[in-house]
Amino acid sequence: MTLPIYWQNPKETGPFEVKIVSFDNGWVQLDQEVLYPEGGGQPSDQGLIIKGTNRWQVKHVKEKSGNIWLKLDKTDGLHVGDIVQVVADSKRRRILMQMHSGQHLFSAVLENEFGIGTTRVQMDVTESEISTDMKMSEEQIDKAEKIVNGIILGNVPIKSLFLTKDEVTSLKLRGNIEGISPKNGKYRLVQIGRDGTIDKNLCGGTHLDSTIEIQAFIVTQIDGKRIKFKCGEPAIEYAISLSQITRKLKNMLSVGHERFIEIIEKTKNENRKLRKQVEHFGINIIENEIMVTGKENRIVELKNFDRNILQKWKGRIPEGNIIFLLEDGFVAVIGTQAEKAASVLKNHGYKGGGKKGKYILKFIGNDKLPSLPEEIFSELKFIRS
Ligand SMILES: [Zn+2]
Image 1 (spheres, protein in one colour):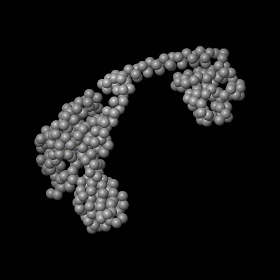
Image 2 (cartoon, rainbow, N blue to C red):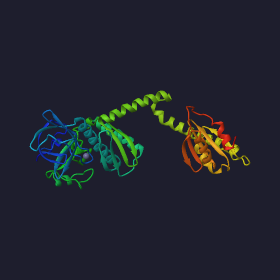
Image 3 (tube, helix red, strand yellow):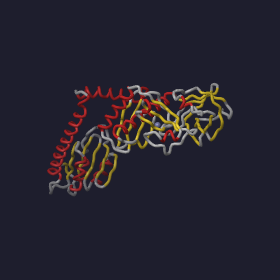
Image 4 (spheres, rainbow, N blue to C red):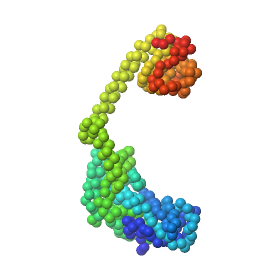
């Protein structure tokens, strides 16, 4: 049984001497399986074909009807029967191995610790993702992350075995055998731990020899049943960037990182209170200045007033009154006669638009927060309130 080189020694990335067997519309088939084809949630290898001093880029690799095909950036200069060198992008291969072995370990920990199954996996070079059959709590994720990194540091062996269907069905596997096709009559089992004590999973991906080579595992995002994570170099780079942000925040907030969440929650609550107060004052202003009956044909200028508050009161602005909200660089015109007022402003060079009694226009000139030109009041035959 000849096994693909990426299974025999996934750390070997070439150059390999191979022969070109055939072409198909930008794709080329080689006489040996040296590059990993996309499958099982692991993206394909990329790399180079070298002939003499010429190079062709391998963009993608796929398996079709049992044959491996390479998508090249161009095929000019290559012919059937050519002996060429193939090199896999070793950094890409290494990171995808770290992500894939890391994913097996993470999924195994979720199953062993919490009885949570993995329903989908997608590896990538910057970030990978799994879907689980149950929503996980923050505490479960925290615990799993710690256990996974403990096993990584434990230098636990990862091993691939090639088994018959009978041998496989006698084992207790994570995941099942359905939908997995054997290669040369054999199933590939990837196990973590001596005799697979931590994990046994059927898989065709490229894997490391020990958990220590995963280097690090970090969960980056939880979105329902979808969990994003990083391993290897991308995880370490992420940890470094978080550490840099943490140092800045420590100085900014004058507290240790363990108090960040408490401080942010406190600030959010204070903000909520302040907004309520602002809304309360805003409503007072509106009631006293604008809603008072008998006051008509007036223009009210409100500077840096929360538009959302006024939006709620829009329908109650007395007929014939116009409100101008002046903000940095912008003026909002609100009221039943807003259209008329907006057109006057446009005649004065203001730009913008709107509808249904609400117009947002941009100030002309450089003034950040100017007043409205006096002519507008006379043209509208309104008085400034
Ligand atoms: Zn796998």
